[in-house]
Structure formats: structure tokens, C-alpha cells
Length: 242
Ligand code: ADP
Ligand code: MG
Image (cartoon, rainbow, N blue to C red; front, top):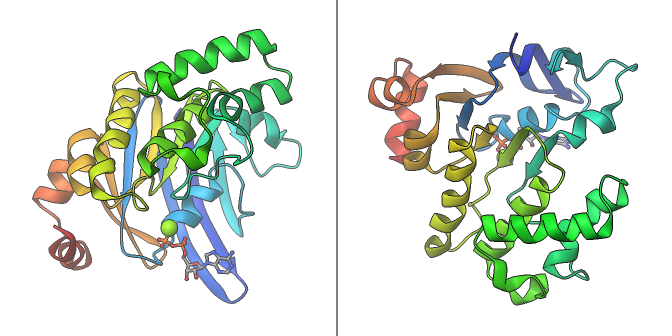
């Protein structure tokens, strides 16, 4: 069981071992926040979840499929996993609607009519119904990130991965993006979120994972990790960020 199962995951870049044996299980509908210092391997860990990185050892199992097995159709797996990055990576030459419609149409999942209707619904969901015709350059950072979330949702994924989705935003725009993520969490989306927003993690996460030096040093409920951290490294990290 487990929507995502990570067993003995190691990843090195040349001689640099960045993930040193990670074991994690994420249940369907669970919201897991990953925290930890810069360089601890959080992004690499996330990128291994949809094989954006080839792993060095261990296993990543998504919906009972070993995603690194050559027999697994990784494109099919990826269709089910939405990813949102720190930098929004919208297509600059497409308007908002086309950004959202592009993947489902390109992959033949939806007709243009269906894709348009779905995109308009998603824009409403992220509070941007009035921006359908705007181009990315005409949007604020918070609006761009909400479009990026809508675009990821357009493939109708049942897992969403977020890598510091609010780190590039001006402070006044962080809340609008976290609000959309909070809604998704409440609707039962399975989510892994790398974040520096400790208040959000505390409020929304079912489980918090603290990574340092390529290891999971500590994990538990937000109450456990924030309220009663056990490891020296967790305590010193939280001292710096809280
Ligand atoms: P975090 O997201 O926690 O800041 P990362 O996963 O981005 O950490 O990086 C962890 C380590 O892996 C860093 O030392 C980084 O330099 C290294 N690293 C990440 N991606 C690559 C890459 N493509 N090639 C070489 N080294 C990398
Ligand atoms: Mg990172």
C-alpha cells in the first residue's frame, strides 16, 4: 500500500552523494511538507518522484509501479503527477488559457472545446477568471504561479509536487498561492511540498519531513516536528527559520 513508496533511494552526481538512503511512504490524500537547509537534497528528492533524475540506488514506486523499471511507461506516470516549480516556467508566447490548454490538447487527452472548458474552470478555481486572455508578462508573480498550478492541474493528476512554489514571490503574493494549495489539500490531493513557509507547513501538512545532508533526519506530524523536535539538527534549523 501507499500512493508513493520510496525505498533506499540514493542519488549521486558524480562523486557527490546527494541522497544517501531515503525511505518514505506517502498515502493517498496525504500532504507531506519537506523542509530543510539549502543543499540538503530536497529538490533532488522531489525530482526523483517523477524520474526527472535517474536514481543511483533504491526504488521509487508510484501507484504500485516501479517508475525506474525500463518496462514502465514513464510518460504515463508523469501524466498523473503535476509539478510546480519556484520559477513558473509558463510559455511566454501563449496566453493564460493556451498555457493551461496546451498539454491536454497536445497529448490528445481533450478536444479544444473540452480543454477550453476545463481551463476556464481551473482559472476560476485559482481565482483568475479575468486573466484568460492575458500573457504571462502581464501577470504578477503570484498570478503566474496560480496559472502554473492550474496548468499542472489541467492534466487531472492525482499527485502534485511543489518545489518552493512561493520562494520567488514578493511577500504580499505568497498568501494567494498558499491559499490555492490549501484548497487542493482539503480536496484530498496527494501532495509533496518543499517549502520554507513554516506556518503553512504547520497548518496544512499531515506530515513534515526534515532533510539535512541527504538524509531524512526527522519526520512526524507538524506538532511533533515543530512543537517537539528531537534531533539537534532539526532544533538548530528551526531556531534559524522560525
Ligand atoms: P535543495 O533543494 O535542498 O537546496 P538540491 O537537491 O537542489 O538541494 O541539491 C543538493 C545537492 O545536489 C547540492 O549540493 C547541489 O549542488 C547538487 N546538485 C543538484 N542538482 C545537481 C546537478 N544536476 N548536477 C550536479 N549537482 C547537483
Ligand atoms: Mg531546492
